[in-house]
Image (cartoon, rainbow, N blue to C red; front, side, top):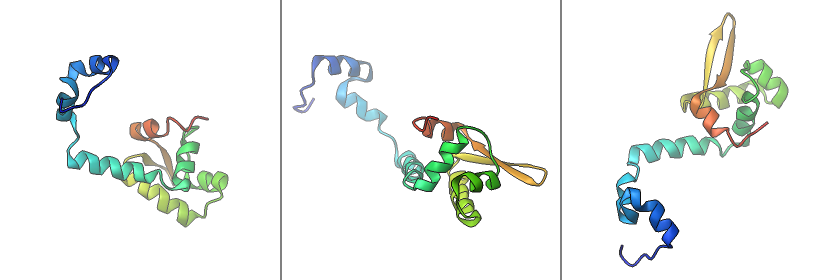
Length: 115
């Protein structure tokens, strides 16, 4: 194991993967790392975190989100577009409204943002 001593408990946990060296086979490829980097960079903006937080409660229209966040409509639209492009939220048309909700990925990312 190239001089890496592991505590017995950790060594046992890694056995099913072939040890520490075997775990290297599970390293994500560049495409996966790039997508993860993009998704996690979304959370570097406080406004997007706030949007995700409120969408934990319910699906909402942009007008509702503007009302509770105090964001200007153009700023909210900018952040929703970024979140939608990344697959974190999805907007669906309902008559003259667009209703935004979290996708499965959005729910998993917003898990720590408990109500």
